[in-house]
Structure formats: structure tokens, C-alpha cells
Image (cartoon, rainbow, N blue to C red):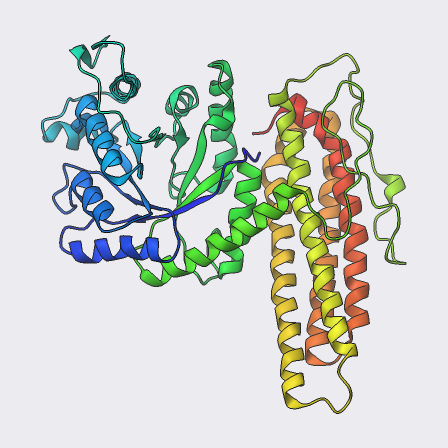
Length: 505
């Protein structure tokens, strides 16, 4: 689900001790290319790495706009009162440019070897919960001395302050259920890394955070979802293994599908950082379109909602564009009837609404494809048989620009369907066997839509190499429009209520 947070992009730089000038230069580059955040790991027991808080202070002094944060601070070797005052001091000096990534301290033996407490994993989590309470008390003005008696930290009359320049966010690095639940109850953000929590694992982890937040009386949207990511701008199309367009598609899908809203690139390569800034621009634009629900030249109509249900599926288009019909809509199975007496909480309704939001993004992008086709068509009609060489080059560029967009859109649809096939559909089958015929049909339609997308690609290639024309491409896009929009409407009609009733993984 999309929690609606403003998108943030940053870097996760290696604070290697043998190249301090280069580390600072990469932090400055992060700001120069328009990214928002610079972060560093914090391993005080590791002499190969610079001290995180000293480095953050220097980076803050050498930049003007970018925020800085640990990713994540090692709590066992940083007493919470001292850490809170370090954070607040730097936040005051920088005018509110500091956030706090915080961890329980995963390398327990290394912590103990450097004089820290030797704790079990469970004890480390309990200590983290106590520390969060202490730090927030330090940052809270008034109320007398701080008195908290815990099993791991006892504060007896400690003075409050300093107060940070802004409300500092505490982002927890968490993977296991107990830490995820703690994140939902207390934290301002969740900060996993893709190397330890792949995209296919985020949904289950998000669910634990959301449920813990609701149980604690919090809105799950209060917890920002951050993601340390790594990848290459080449390769065969795995997660973040390809050109910028693939990164844009995949991070947009994670934003709309899993609610991730802060992406932090783990790379010390200046070229990667520059290209990631281009990715950031593309993701912001794509998410803005999806969130606005805008469709070029049209308002998306909504059908009448079932009684007692607050999420309304989008009806199929009233007019078909293509004479070809690949989907036998009369043969589509339906799922179990909705219980008219059942009510749903706003939290339960979010999953179904999220499905519609993702589909609206696909609908809006499809309108963009059609608009580009018409732009090319207009250019073609304006060029005669004796067009000049310059006009020929302009036309070829228009076609290739359209090709890049269509290719990106095809990949976006395929990624969305792949995620459903791999995780959502198996879950719904298991949770309610009566949904199996619907899920089977949806997966069959995915294959049909894949073939239609290939038809668009072939028509596009024919246009570019001269063996086809704009009318052939128009026909292929018309068929895609009818097929995909019918499929999306059918999926919403059958799944928005089961998603509210059964939840997601």
C-alpha cells in the first residue's frame, strides 16, 4: 500500500578510514546532484572505518542542504543519553539536518570485545526499547529530571536537553518479527537493506509493522519505510539490474505496492550516484502521476460501491477501441459473494484501495503511451516524400523516444503481474480455496496480456525499421487498451473485498 510519504533519495557511503577526502567528496556529490540524504554505517569496534558521528559532523559542515544520518547507530557502544545529546547538538548546528538510524547492535561478540555489554538478541531488543524512551525524554523540554528504571538502562534525575532543531526521526534497522513489531509500536521509520530483505519479502515484514502499529493505537502510515538498495545499471533485468528505466519502474512499483518512500543507494561510485539522481527524478514523476489518479483527457469513472464496503472497483471502458476481442468476458468466474452484514475497518480497506491505486498508475501510463503514438502520427503527417535529412533524423528520434517509453511500460506491467503471480495469488488461493477459479483465470489473462505487449513491441519495431506504419502501431495499442483495462477492472471487481477480508502476505 502507498502510505503517501514524500519521496526521499540518498546515499549509503562506506566510511573507509584510508580515503577520508574521497568520502567527503562523495557526500558533497550527493548534494550536488540533488539527492536528499547522506548516511554512514556505524561500527565503533571496526578500526577500518571512520567514527560515524565525527564523520557526520564534518560532512554536515561541508554541505548546505543534504540531511545526514547513521545507517544504523550501534546502540550498545553509544549510551542513549550521550547519543541523544550528540544528535540534538548536530541538529541544532545544522538547522535540522539530522536523523537517527538506530540498531540493537547485531555484532554481539564485537561489542563485548570492545567493552560493551554482552547481551543476547532478546536482551538487545529490550535495551533498544528502553533507549528509545530515554532519548525521546532527553529531547523533550520541561518536566523535571528524567527518571527511568529499566533492566538495561537506569536514568535517575538526568537533565533534559538540548532540544533538537526539529523532530528527529528514529529509523530502526529490523528484520525479525520482534524487531519489526517494535518498529511498528515505537519507531518513526523502518530501515532494512535489500541484501537482507529482498523486494519479495517486504510485504510480510510490512504486515507485521502495520499490525503492531494498529495494536499500539498508531496509524501505520506514521512509520516511514526506507530501503537501502544496491544494483548495477546494466544486466538482464533482475532487481535493479539494468538501465535507469528499469530502476524507475521497480522503485515506483515498490512505492505504490509496498509503501517504501526512501531509497538509499549503497555505492561509492560517482557515476552510480549521478545516475541514481536521474532515477530519483523518474520515480518522483511516476509516483506523482499515480497518486494524482490523473488520466490524460479523461476522468476515471467509478462504479457504485457495494453496501457496507468503502473501496469501489473501476468499471471497464464503455467503448472498445479494437475489433479484436481476446478475452471471453462472459466466461470469467466469480468469487464467493460478499457478506452484506460484514463491516471493514479503514485499515482493512487499504489493501484493496492500494490495488486500485496501482492499477490507476498503469492506466495513466497507458494513456501516456497513446499520447506519444498520436504525437508521432502528427509528425508523420507533416512530413512529405521529399523531407530533408534533418526532418528524417527528427522523425527517427521521435520513434525511438516512443520505443523507449513503450518498452518501459511493457516492463512495468510485466513486473506488476510477476509480483502478483509470485506472492499475492498463492496467498489468496491458500486463504480462501473458493477464490482459486478467479485466481487461475487472472493468471491466464496475464499470459494473454504478455502476448499483446509483445504485439505492441513488434508493431513498434516495424514502425522504426520502415516495414510497418503508424496505423499498425495504433491497432496494437488499441488491442492493449481493451485487453488490459478489461483485465484490471475484472481483477478489482473480484479481489478488493477478499483483500480486505484476508489481508496480504
